[in-house]
Length: 562
Image (cartoon, rainbow, N blue to C red):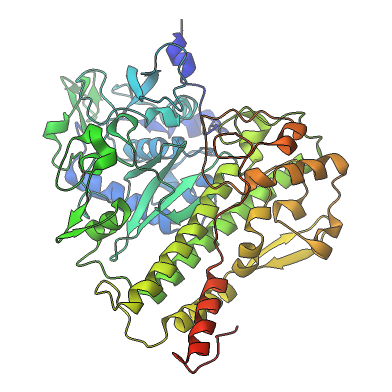
């Protein structure tokens, strides 16, 4: 009988769906997983990194598209199969897929238990989870069908698998992943980035300037690409944030069949002490302190006291960290453009299912960020919160760049004499390069831009029951084609405070009626949202700053215009 803890493992943040359509029996035979290698070698790990990097760089917008794209060198060996995975599943399914294609062993946590005690939610446990069951790919001479194993992973894996104590080192119920050092040799493609608010991504590139590029799947099966920023919260070791890598494993005690396949034996994992790049640096700080006192950790680099995220970039830079402010702005806008295009696909999937034509439920889910059913599949509150955080982070960084330029900070690599003007020029350049549009309820295409999105960022509806115009924050004449009635309009207005909130509060009750939302009170811990979102309009800030410079005679040129 399935234990209650194994059953609990099926309650997860990132809803997962089966891998299906196995094709004929003959095709299924092509999917045999024969384990021929006792362990992952250094060359296997490098090939894994290259595999992930290629998929991350590919022009594909769902996991299934990526697996079937030219970026996947194994695609021609697959049986007729469609892959549907979510954020938590993606690292596991990709790792298992690669292991299958290369005759490598694979094992996984099959059940977790909350350290909070009986009844604890393994998705959001305050003290993390412990492994209570494990499984592995059977080792037989004829091999086993890989597709059901991948199917099983999709049904078992959840973000709870990543929410485990980084210092635990059980040789039997070991964790699948470990905490790595913070440097370019350890944070590589295939490294997991775990957001304790219920999201997991894979690193696919670390740029020379230390920016970490990530990609992830979503409940609607769309794929997004971004860079790792402050939306990935740093916490203590008991929750496993932020970086994790798959733990080295090997098969011991197996016999080798005539065809080279390993038969029998058992899986043994490397202990933390035996992993060369294992480190608690992301909790201890630098110089190392007590990992349990992670809130007070300091981050010193080259004699300078930094915040964690600046320290991370410094550690991952190929040389001394220097900000090229104009290039940074371009990169951030390109990343946000990717996010917006991914959001467009998510909205279109919801529209294609006709969710906007359904009557809304009487109450919101118990928590809009982590639930199940239609809301989990087609709403976008978590995605939108990360998007808003990205705009906010860009705003803060650009303001900081201008301030650094005013004092000629050594970390700023800028030789011009009008940084606000050059930043504005880059803004309009990237704004023109980002093509965003949607088809309204009347069937007409509406063109948008990053600049327009900034103006309506807190109007973008995350509610899948609302019209496409409201999903894209339409106002005035643009909103006239929306066919929502009075009830949905009331919900849209009442949800304004939730749209203002960029912090995801997974542990707060949010199952309110529209009347509850309208009454308030509002605040981060009320579950009803906040009265005002943070400032994100960096273009307006730059124009205002430059106008003041012009008025004071600091620069003679007029403000940059598109």
